[in-house]
Image (cartoon, rainbow, N blue to C red; front, side, top):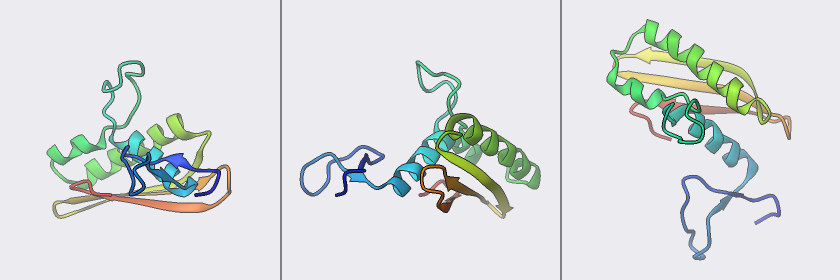
Length: 124
């Protein structure tokens, strides 16, 4: 692996029996994932960290929920990852029983444009 390796999330041991590492793009994706799925109050030393969209599985799916989720996601990402990414667009699509969150962002370190997609029930 290159010298710019990061710990992979979630933490695990790789095939070499070492701590698993990942590249910058996957690391930034992991950071976005952690912001979106950490429930505020879950971290003891930073109780306001997170967005908590995993809890939305228990809410009725609607366009109003999609709009509220869009603002929640954008605000959380700007607050917690502004030094790592520039959020270009957040799109939330409510269809049938699925809620899809699409985040388009630019990595500040590389200038690369990337997109992360999360679909309920929340899979990566």
